[in-house]
Image (cartoon, rainbow, N blue to C red; front, side):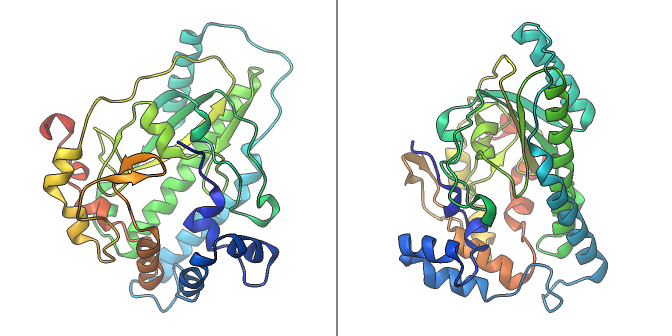
Amino acid sequence: MTRYDERDTMFARMNYEAGSPEYRDYYSRHPELKEVDDELRSKLDLCDVSSLYYDLIEASEIRSNFSLVEDLRPLCEGMPSNNRFRSDSSSFTDLVRRVAHDFGADLVGVAEMKPEFYYSHRGRHREHYGKKITDLLPFGIAFAVEIKKDMIDSAPAMTAMVESSRTYLKAATIGLSISYFIRSLGYSARNHMDGNYLAILPLVAEASGLGVFGRHGLLISDRFGPRIKLGLVTTDMPLKCDQSINVDLESFCGSCGICSTKCPASAIPVNGKEIVNGTRKWRISHELCYSYWRTNGTDCGICIRVCPFSKGIGFSQSM
């Protein structure tokens, strides 16, 4: 599995302004994406006043939450203390789990950070565009916070996006708290949060045992289904890694398919898995998905709402 370039993600591509150096560089290398991306950028912004589900109060909270997240991004990195606390990996892991839960994480797991879990290059923001990612810390503390069912049940209304913004902010503050704590013990720690990721969080979360992927391309946890927002702290603190969950949802998702039939953009495949970037998986059309976001003015969430695992069936009931 080759490392994925963050410049190819939908959110990075939408940041490339016409005529900018990033825009010229990216589309000189990917001319096949220029037309579709230009069209997507011409659509409504999320929370636009003319969007179908616009609500002044909800839009204001969404903007304020993401504004605060943006202000927190520079805090993701920092220098560790010169006084290193010594202990064994089991004790450190127990400590990290307890601290993560105390800070508000609902699920916590630890994974060995394989190189392919990290992006190859940064691309989300102009100041980091094209920078190679070389600081590959060896351990990842993956965690999840619950997306409230009553909020996501309103999807694709703006209410669901309010909850999305809240959980992005919550994951950001939890990750910052964990990383500051680890650095205080003399170890390197890097928080990965919205707009400032160096790694692909769902891959790390799967490896750490938090869940498995479903047809909709989202990580499904046993406790909350896909109603989770992920966070990650990478570190060189010696930790004991968890095992991935030995659950195969291909048969269940293959028979169910409700996320595919209910997707208003037809972005989720009706057919089976195929090889994508060296991995057998369901191929999601990110362009079709994001086009609906920009048409609707919210981040949708219908696939999360209709998924049977969001309603609490658990893995044992799917076998």
